[in-house]
Image 1 (cartoon, helix red, strand yellow):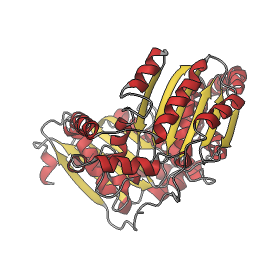
Image 2 (cartoon, one colour):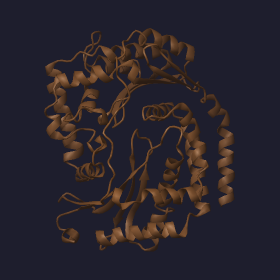
Image 3 (cartoon, rainbow, N blue to C red):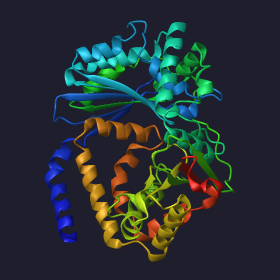
Image 4 (cartoon, rainbow, N blue to C red):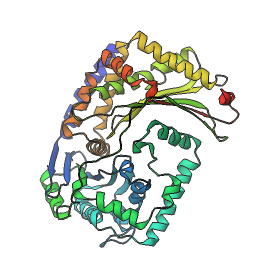
Length: 449
């Protein structure tokens, strides 16, 4: 079966090689005002995706103004000097396209997916709102209420989301990654027009942005359009490098118990502070990626799944997770959801024992090879989505990586050894740099433990 899987993946790679080659052309250039432009050619369909990424997210907000990055994302769909409020999205829809936006701790992005011959229109509109947004006090009040309602629905009414906020705040002692992207409710309620415009004028500038254009396009045409519409925009002077508060040495394990009568399924989760993918040095992140997949990537075949869900039958769900795409230190996590009758303490102990056994026994070479093949196949299939590819490139570039890092990542993953995985486990599993959380109902027996 293992030999058949290897043959299947090899055949898949060969069969899609021609298609991947068509989508592999990448062009990069920078305008005089500092705007970085990346063109990802893919002529397989007459479609283009324009994504404009700003190197500004929730972790770049001024102290006491949490939620301003996400708030501004909403406000960007208001009017400009040339467009009425709502006209941007209406125009995209009238041209048969779709658009949206997203905010993370490290970036804010805006995108449109349209027919290739509509790219110029999209560029004209996106460039217009980069520097010419027009806001009123009424806009602020209305959209602030929308954001607060979004927080109510997604966070206040979800005990798991509230639990996650508390854990994240405990994991980061000093870094703004501990602040929720949507913002603390008490601070969102006080955001003003001046706050929004101050963040906008500083960060929404060509010298703080990456433009990704992916699809059926010609790089020379993209360059001409970018110079026409984005080229005249003024950069923010003296913007400088991204400077954020950093984590002090973490010397004490943190634990918390979150009780809420709305909890349907208690569980245990532990997160460790972990290194991110660094430009020119992605090997440790690759090993952590493999470690997460080995421990908890699949309930049926992973270490935690096999030991705790099938052999011991103490869990109905287990997982391990890690994402290295982060400008600063990220996290590595372990999760166990116990079966009825197994306490949270017993579940935590079983999870720790399973991890310890994995480290003592070493990495199953066949399992590591299988995961590598799965990841290679997923990377090949991912080439079929121009929007997904544009998003991968944008997220990486705004997280501090380079085009060379992005291109090298698949091969770095394939080069990870069993020794690399165990070394990564040894480095990340430091309880002094961790937060262990129990989510439970008030009636859960472990409350007094």
